[in-house]
Length: 109
Image 1: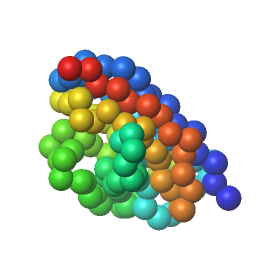
Image 2 (image 1 turned 45 degrees about the vertical axis):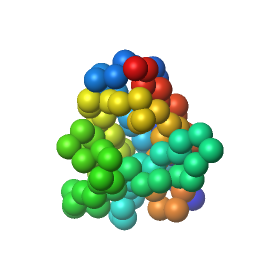
Image 3 (image 1 turned 90 degrees about the horizontal axis):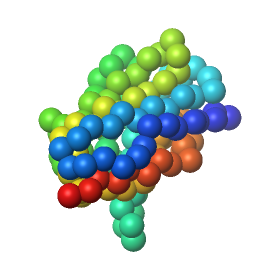
């Protein structure tokens, strides 16, 4: 079993930045990722990263978001720059089939 603790959400103006973090309770060998869920919509992929650092991004965030991980600390981060109002959502960390509790990101126009 894996416990995930997320942090870093909040309110920011359009064009601003936020950094999300997710700490896992044990070493993770597989992919770590971030998803988001807009109100009334299904959860969607934002970005994933392999243990070796290979990354994958959803088209709407390419060039603006950067995912990274620290294997020694069992953490994954999401640096979000040039935020847009449509990035407003609840963001979830996803690790080894477990979900974080979710953190709200709100971008005002």
